[in-house]
Image (tube, rainbow over all chains, first blue to last red; front, side, top):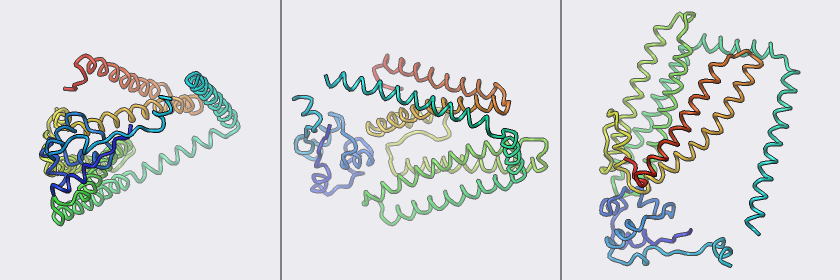
Length: 75
Length: 250
């Protein structure tokens, strides 16, 4: 289930590094790095926390795109 | 319709795999009867004698190899951290990879050190005292390096908790991990479980062959079987326990 994210872009606007964002969100720098690379989809709680810290909506950071397999299954 | 086709294909795949393994087993058995097992046994005894003759040097090579590799990695990490501080995210990824590699090398060296020490523990070894000293020094050094690496990781990530010399260190460390880190641990554990299942099966088959061809005895087969059972039973036990407490591991 592909989850696109613009976390790095929004983090850069705030001019904070991964470590600082991680501390504010209560997670490790590695987790922020994994999310930004798209290697990890955060929980709802964490996604909401990140949106609150960056003062934007969750949908502005994360967006869901249906994969080809899921579309085939629906059809 | 698609689902039925998928199920039939997977049964077909399993059937083909079993057939191929049967063919492989038949060929191995056929050719091993043709081979001169006495000469293979003689070669294995010679290899063992060679290792026993050089055991001290192998132990020393393990120790110095570990010393050089870990010192190189630790100095690299410290230099990078001093140069870039906390501002370079990519450098942190690199530092974490280097630390992970160092820990893995340390653990493998510990296992090899134990195996070499077991080889060295024989009356025929004139340098047995030296072997024991090298083993103890290597084991102490490995302990120091592991503690240092964990404390270094805690220094770079203040959220990490747990004293490496504590008996419940893994529990505290795991509790201080966040959701992504826990997910990585769970996935890694499951993949390791899958690998171990196949490894145990392979090793037991190998030990059957050793028993038939070289009269290797039953103890090793029983030991591997017991360890396999422990793995399966502990997997079952923790699966039930974790389901009961709603997925929270404490």
